[in-house]
Length: 239
Image 1 (tube, helix red, strand yellow):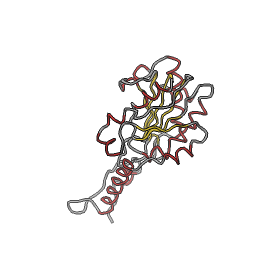
Image 2 (cartoon, helix red, strand yellow):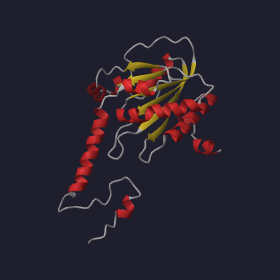
Image 3 (cartoon, helix red, strand yellow):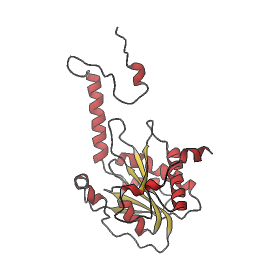
Image 4 (tube, helix red, strand yellow):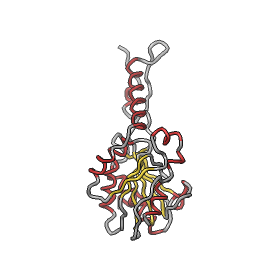
């Protein structure tokens, strides 16, 4: 019996290393694992978000639905610019808000379905005393659509929870993007990102909420976001 010299290293990383070979190709088991991971990533991109189920998970919040200018999934994938534009009018807002949360399917509805509600709930628990706008649930949405929604909601800051591009290791990773003083036309350098929110070695819901709410508080205090806002949430949480 040949000793597997890669076994110990494989326990320390989800990366595909030391796969071995059968003749000039991969062993059958490794090839099937790769094909399964690839299929799972493709499914996560194309699977539609179950908005009704998400609304049930968010019964504690006032929510509203929206869609981008991308009318369907194929258009959304081919035309990223349309996913950044709001495709409908939202109800007028009389009051101003400190924060607006936007949940968009992005490139992984699986991530949103699994993680958006618990992350938002954990954030809300940490943001008592702040005025939070109704939560907007967006289909075929990209990150920048939050800028237009945040401006419409008269929010000083917007947090977009969105499904990240699936990989061959994780297909349900959620990202959170914070923007201060949101309005259309902002560059990505005006945002802060908390990524890798998932249950397979990524950020837990609670730790993600710690980082997001730290950024929100500091953004509102300093009046900025993006490259000018240096994250130091780890030490703040420990203290």
